[in-house]
Image 1 (cartoon, rainbow, N blue to C red):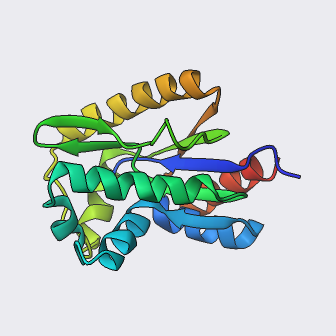
Image 2: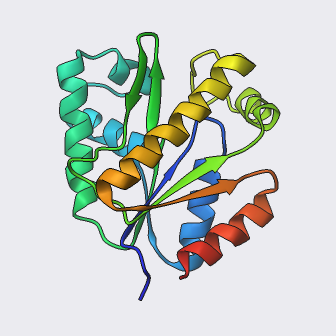
Length: 181
């Protein structure tokens, strides 16, 4: 039996969460959920939005409804690795996107990489429209994420683990070892 039920993998866009989570979940035999994809599926099922851009253009009350419904679905899951940002950046500032009042992950894994690696990954990924960062704003986002997840872990009684993603295979092995405990 694993020492965790829900593990939340958080990180800034482009750090490599999705690629790492998908492969590791398959290899260790746990469930995998991408929070953003689940939100988009819910929005589509309700005929509210069919793309990320449409969903994030919705009224904030509707976005909250979608966010909450996705969180409620995840809260019913077991043996699940959840892929989410943890802290979203908007033109108005930052918003903690780990739904603390609904999901209580046993383990919060903060995935980090060098700023250069993140920018390289973003340049190669044409599937998403992202906020335009520079080195300073990206570094600030990563620092804010660390701080927010530390606070969340105290509030939830969760363990926080920082995983560096400089080499995919090494990161994958480290994550498999961590999640196999």
